[in-house]
Length: 230
Length: 105
Image 1 (cartoon, rainbow over the protein chains, first blue to last red):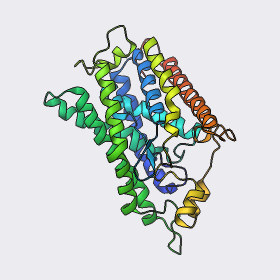
Image 2: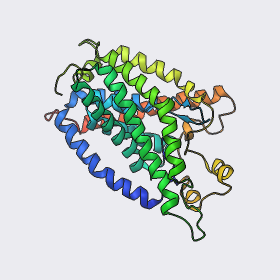
Image 3: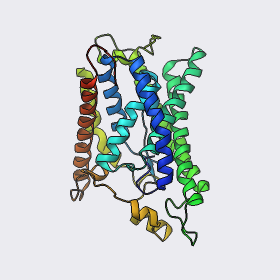
Image 4: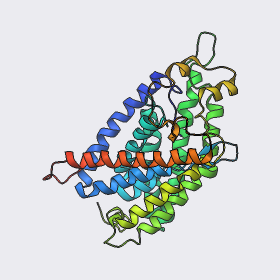
């Protein structure tokens, strides 16, 4: 789901960057308010986990690949704002060091994977938990919907390119496939395999976190699961 | 802490499994794949492609990708470098937070 360099027009990158700036500012403020210094190692572990889980490409039946993000997992454990910070840092490292996702496309990629995915996932989790459902299952369902909303956002950003930006002869200047191809392709990968991978990883880790004792460093990440306000 | 570190080491060693999935992600093709698919390279794509150079492009060591094992080694190295840089950034954040405030960022 990492949109590469040159796939989005500079205008699109600018708009998405402008959208992300206030979100990052709000995330910084919220995290400062909610978490204290002792939570930094757990946020770091969240970012590292998200970074590494994105390296596990899974095969999609149409011959392409996709991957989980871990966005909802971080949102449920650390809160959605901290998830935005941690996943954004993972995405910045990926684009700068490894060329995974464009540097100019960071606004768009962070919007999809570090904002849409954790917030939608957290919202769905929060709704389901209201009905006294199992938290691991609620988080798994939330993460499945979260990653698919992120895929929908990425497909929309890509699919708008040929519509909005083309040369005088009508040929595409940037990403060449329109909405009718981009959205189904992005959703197919995540509705079938990547979404299930995301749900499994999320559900299993939450199931584990609910059982860690106070001696475990991850105990700090399980406060939300134990019903504590962090 | 020990358990978490072991879990991360296991994950890092297993990352090359992610190389086994055939093909590339939809919408993440390089310019040659784009040309193959559409018959041309959109001007803007060619212009902005590679505006910066990466130390481990595509999570691999340049030129050291002749076999699965070489790619796997590059992939594992990338995972280690990535985690190290993330740890460093959060260490910096922790340093920058004044001790008295006890708050992040």
